[in-house]
Image (tube, rainbow, N blue to C red; front, side):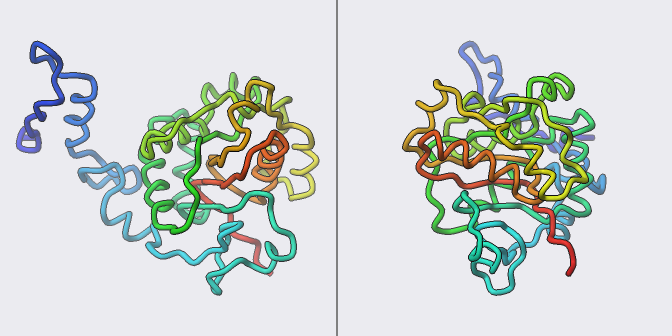
Length: 257
C-alpha cells in the first residue's frame, strides 16, 4: 500500500552506472510517511503538522540576551543589570511538555537519531530572528571524556553538526574542551552550578587558532540558569573570539515569583 507514496529519485541522486547514491537514498527515504515522534500520527515529517501548530509558538516574545519570555519584546531587566557575556540566545521552546520528554529521549535514552529533526526545528526558529551576525563556526558545549564515554555521544555535538550543515557552516568539536568531569547539573541552583563549572572549560592552543577573531555559535540542548553557557562563552572570549551567540533547543522558564 505504501508504494503510492514513493516518487522516483531525481537524476542527480544516482551514481555513475545508475546505482542510487547515499544522498539519493536519504532523499528517497525522507519522502516516506512516518509516525510523529510525539503523537504517533502518520505524516511526511517526524513532527506532524498538528503537533507543530500545538507546541511551537510561531512568534515567541523573548529577551534576546537570555531567551526568557519578556512581554516588552526587548532586553529584560536582569540582562540590563547584569549582561551575560554572550550576545544573544536563540531557542525553540520552553523546557516543558512535550519538549522536556523529547529532549530526555534524545539525551538520556540513546536516541541520537532525533538530532536531525530537532536541529531542523531550531534552525527554523533561528531563521525567524533578524539582525543576528552570521557565525563563522558552530561549536558544541563539550562533555568531559568520562561523561562522553558514559553516554556514548555528545548531544550538543549531534545538534551542532546538523545545524552547521543546514547553514553551510563549519562545525568543530575540538575548539572548546571540558577539563574535568563535573557532577550532573540537574537539580542544582545557580550558585552550585557556577561552583561546579569553575575553571572547567578550556580552549586548547590549537583551538585558539580556530576561534580567534571569529563570531561563534555555541550549541546546547537546554539552558537552565545560563551558567554553562556563561562559562563556555568566557573561555571562548578569553581565547580571542570576537563574539558568541548561544543556540539551545529549550529554555527553562524562570521560577514563579
